[in-house]
Length: 144
Image (cartoon, rainbow, N blue to C red):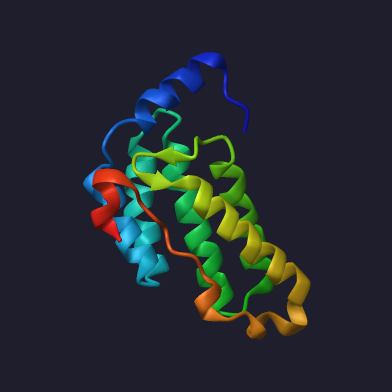
C-alpha cells in the first residue's frame, strides 16, 4: 500500500493520537491468544475508521487471524493472512497509537519465514511460544 503525501501526513497525525479503548481491548485479546475475539473487536473500529490509521487495526486483525489459522494447522490460511497483515503494517511508522509496529512487523515476519521453512507437512511443529505479543509503548503500555 502506497500513501499519498496527504495520507502520510494524516497518518502521522492519527498515529500520534492515544489509542482508542477498542484497540487496547483488541491488543489484550491478541496477547491472550483470543484471536477470533481480537478480530471481532478490531473489525468494528477498522470499519468505522475512514483514515489511513485503519490499516493499523486491519493489520493487527489479519496477523491475529493468521495465528488462528496456524493454531488450526491451516498452513495456507496462515501464510496468506500473516502476509496480508504484514503488508497492511508495512507503511505505518515504527510506533502508531502506542503500538510498537516495528516490533510486531519484525516478529511476524520471523514467524512467517519460520512457517514457510517448515512447510505444510510440518505446520504442527510451529511452537505456540513463537507467536509474538503486540507490544505497546508510552501511556498505551497498560494494554499488555
